[in-house]
Length: 201
Image (cartoon, rainbow, N blue to C red):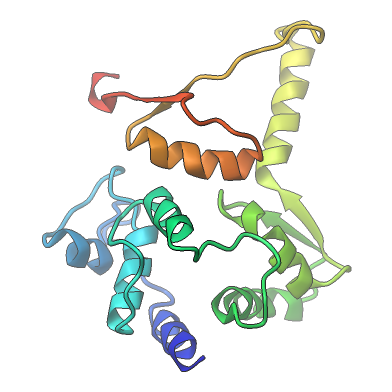
């Protein structure tokens, strides 16, 4: 528990960190991870932030990586991956959710948009922290509904009896994407992604 509290303490201090310039991904976590200053869309820093925090706390993660998918796969291999049935011992997830949501709940919000791609995975935790009086709105689901509406209105929607296919093109490791996407989509999409050279597009 002391280690978890240390991780949370370090993360709290970093609240308010900004990219300079804005939308550049230029932050100290990336500089620490890559050993040099980097910027651009190919350098998202969500995972390098996690790696930096745990390093500062003196905690070794299953793998040093800038990829969420790679950490997920490593955690699965080491038996440390948890997606549901969170226990009181999983203090980081529940405590962070409650701390981040507290200011919103104090203002009496009655609806919350799950705008980050990772939030649906934590929907149960977020719902528990918010209580039954707050409606959770999935940005992904609502975007799909709106797309369906637009395609129908413009008569561009495929026949309902037809069955479409899916092709996934990624700029990073295909197997990492497949692992994460299978979790998000709740279906097996292994061997369905291919890596492309994004500079050619």
